[in-house]
Image (cartoon, rainbow, N blue to C red; front, side):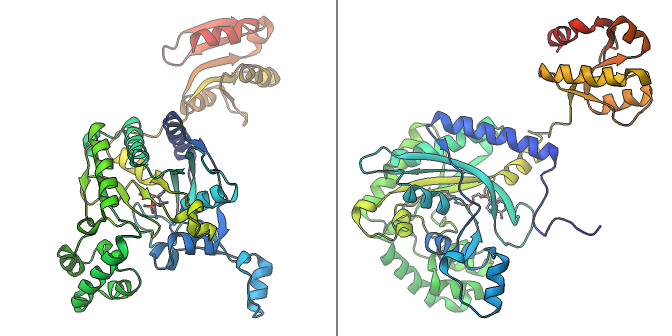
Length: 438
Ligand code: HAM
């Protein structure tokens, strides 16, 4: 085998791809009920969009981005020429930065307009160490709502995601919602400094990566899986004890609204998320303690300003959103036996019982397809017996046999593959008979 999929990337084989289509369709339907409309942005964006938007010190931007170079740009680079910022491109590691760029670029939230609600789906790329549930190309479905900082937006989106997870089959009791508040510009800087001081007092106990993080992004140490770091961080000051009054009121309101909707959640004061744009509410959904998150998101009130480069108060477009990981959802649903990928099935197989019937078989199949009956035929001159085997393999519910006798009678012999009953059906009645039977 000369070529295989690159490490951490996978083919979506037909049964996976069919499931993806139905899963995505269910998401779009659920989100449409809440007013979300589809948007698709390019898979490649300027690298500095992600650097500014997601944050240089995050793993996603600092270590995991795939850079994209055209041949000409690569040659220029090798010749020692400097690349223009607009030629420095990357594969998107997530969807939020691109969607917010698009909202700003096309002025989708003009002054005084109601919030814009957008949903997107497709592959994202992160050069992570591949392992179960962690891929280098994975599919996300996400939503972004821009133009309001109201806590009702946060609560509505979280409730919508949980309703979607219930709709695709996750048992209510398996869904673990973790929430936290990250504060905002008026309370987080002081907290960050306090945390950094605490971490520096314990610097010798941290792993090497955390020692680095303490300088660049002290909150990220909450995410470290290293036992030593975790033990230290258990005693670290927590952001929720340092929220300003406005952030506390916002957070309390979100919780109140979740309570009202009967949504169970757990407050997790170590939940900081891996992307730097978050302010106030953040959340993640796991299926059971400590498992990989199947979805997560939060509020990002400063991201649009960061992307537009404007500091004007009037250019502030607060936002809230989330994304879920398709592969993780699918794997979890399959492990629980909630979903089995559908095998191939077809309504009708038209079998050829005589060399003279080949053209008629082709024509009959075409006529049926024109009436939206899904239909297959043999293309390899198989014997009638092996055509029946093929029909079985394809999950055909009916087989229409066309031989010399049927040709003279202008009819087919229609066999029900479950009951094995056969009936002669004239060609003029075939589509209507099948429509009744199927
Ligand atoms: P995220 O938490 O980085 O957030 O990713 C969201 C979901 O994508 C995760 O919960 C997980 O299910 C899936 N995911 C992430 N990385 C991988 C991977 N390497 N392999 C498989 N699945 C993965 C975001 O991407 C934010 N843009 C969410 C957001 C939208 N926040 C606000 N708006």
